[in-house]
Length: 112
Length: 110
Image 1: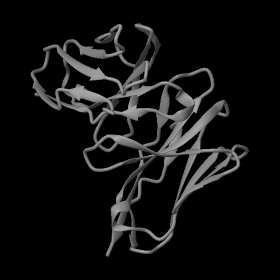
Image 2: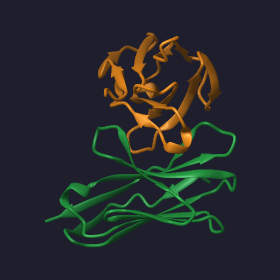
Image 3: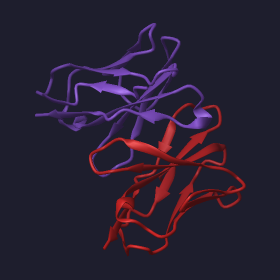
């Protein structure tokens, strides 16, 4: 049973560019959340998708957007990249939030 | 004030030691509580949920004190493989986001 898969694993982009990160949730999970984890910090909630809609959003600017597809997979898009966007981007999926979330291994984004 | 606060450590303990981590949360509407483990440059993995009555999973025991808004994790008979960062995580009622502490780093030495 595949867990949460994310692609790519690593990415280097230049300031001002745009990036798209992808996530396939664990089998049986219908909810996908995205988190940003800076070095030495805990993950910070970006947003959550359920039934192809953004259900909740954290304190991130509009440069961060997303999408969920009918098969529950999801994309995270970041426009006009800043150096401060360099981080590990984690996707987490769930079916019942009381049972916790399963995280993917993340995409490490470096903005130069 | 951070929503979830943890001592960053590191806690440096010998194999076989017992070690305890504490965590406090600020929102009294918090309803679900978890401990996650994160190895260096890896994703967080759910270690255990934390229930009001306290719960145990092998060498790991979690406690919740709602009145003091305090969560703890006790690790008995530490193994070298327990070396990791332990993240205290809270979910607030009517919210879907997980709120993470910055983590407590544990180093278990031979």
